[in-house]
Length: 174
Image (cartoon, rainbow, N blue to C red):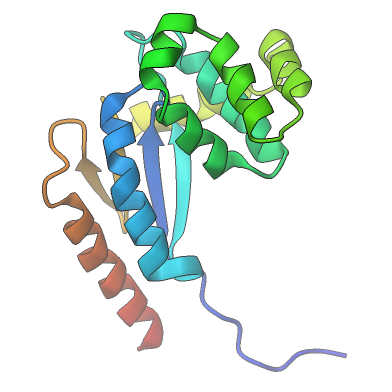
């Protein structure tokens, strides 16, 4: 039996190149929460990894976040790690396992993922794609083919993302 109802168009995608040891990315969380509240599933917000060399635990944090996604709690984990940027800087990878435990994730599996590197290719692919499109810092947003750099200033970015999203959504209704 086939469903003859028209297929719903795919939601616009907002790619957010982020680094989980970045205080600017932590600041951007308020905007991301507001966008998720406003658009719900009409906007697909995807966290993309862009660990910066200046933060020695950022690559491990990206891998741990990927494991949290595997366990179904990626956004919650990323937000929790961003909330502890200073702690991560001071205590290192132990914080990543602590956050997993606090959220009720399989912390041993997060620790094992950091050891066996099972998510390195995903993190490397995100970073390579970011570099290919001109990402140089975090957070950087890409929506509707437009790149918006939040590493210099967050000022006005949410409004610009909303303008683009509204335009893309209006185009779906046409």
